Amino acid sequence: MRIRSLLPFTAIALLVLTACPGAKSIQSLLDDPGQYDGKTVRIAGEVTQSIGALGIGGYQVNDGTGTLLVVTKTLGSTPRVGARVGVEGTFRSAYTVGSHSGAVLIESKRKTE
Picture 1 (tube, rainbow, N blue to C red):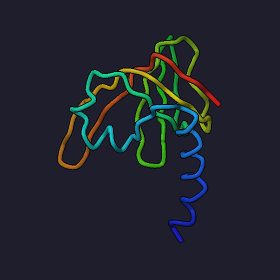
Picture 2 (tube, helix red, strand yellow; picture 1 turned 90 degrees about the vertical axis):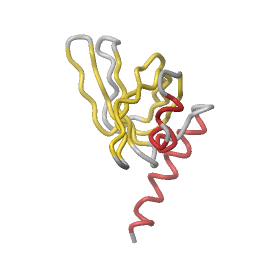
Picture 3 (tube, rainbow, N blue to C red; picture 1 turned 135 degrees about the vertical axis):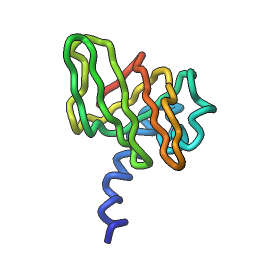
């Protein structure tokens, strides 16, 4: 039953990925964060959390393979929860402890659908 509940989300994630050419899966970024650290990457997915204040904001993107925090410095520019986005930015690996990796994407461009 769990697989059936993931099918609609996976279908949406695939559509968003095709709308953002060259997008990497979040899982691939987190599986080998050292390979991408400091490099420009693209991701696409659905915004699951969003917060902004004083000209800085952050939002979490889920692409069906994982979630990644995106930081933006564009005033008043955090997308709403539920929005589908394609984001390009600089990937920064924060830590890897055992099987857990923490990282952020510093947004340079975003397309919201």
